[in-house]
Amino acid sequence: MSRATFIISRTDAIGDVVLTLPVAGVLRSLYPDARILFLGRSYTEDIIKACGHIDGFLNWDEWRDLPAGEAARAMAATGADCIIHVFPDAAIARIARKARIAERIGTTNRIHHWRYCNILVRLSRRNSIYHEAQLNLRLLVPLGGRSEYSLEEISGYYGLTRLVGLSPEMEGMLDPERFNLILQPKSRGSAREWGLENFRRLVGLLPRERFKVFVSGTAAEGKQLAPLLSEYPFVTDLTGRLTLGQLITFISKADGLIAASTGPLHLAAALGIHALGIYPPIRPMHPGRWAPVGRRAKVFVKAGECSACRDGGDCSCIRGIPPEEVEGWLDVVLRGPGK
Image 1 (cartoon, rainbow, N blue to C red):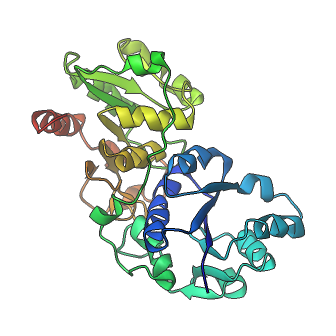
Image 2 (spheres, one colour; image 1 turned 90 degrees about the vertical axis):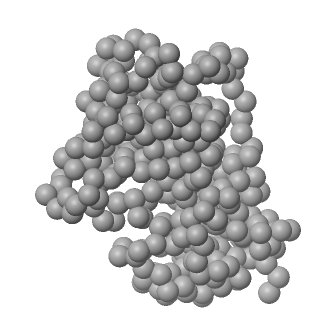
């Protein structure tokens, strides 16, 4: 059939959505004249709007509480010919079938996909040796995509080209004479964290004449970070001050970002700046599955099984990565070509 309009469905977190943008990029390369829509949550809309491969955003938060018939009519009204269920959601799969979308792509390891999808891709994420971004792209095999893409290839498919402007005040925060470094100490519970004490020690190691340091996060996280900010008043507090769209632009203009496995880390990698992820060696949250993908992305992970930390929220393995190692990486970056 002639595939004129695609829906990519991914209704979970910011980092997951960033790692799904290459699906839109590859799809655009396969079908240059197609209309590509993205079904996501309200809080990820700014990411979708920033992606040049995507033609429109569909808000699942507006559809999810509608009666099934109304949601199906809203989906059918998009004129979509194909939906790609990157994130498996039984309600969305059911609505897509009710909307009579001709091609509905899902995975074999979800029972509801056997019922509601008519194209199934053999794919199991839990024990896979592949990165999340590589697994996402396997869903394009029925549409002409390859079964494997290298991470280097994937880094060229994000398409974050439609960035919003910053106010003169925000632009003026960046220092062209120093390395503008963003620290994202918190993760809103989505990842094992390196710990406030490690970030505090790292800031103390960084020479002020070489680094302009920013701390980002939500307003609530800003309160948790008060000890660090009060100890180092020269650190610029961005917590709660930027919309997601503004944060994307600010990250693109900075030089580096350090975080655990969070949305801002994946945005930094996608935008091509130096992105350092600090990870635990625990499956499935280890960097083999969730590392930032970008030409200037790097991870620190402690060797070993980390079995004692598997079931707890606190992780001594990730916290055991010394700030001196991270500062050493920054020193190498500064001594390299460019910033």
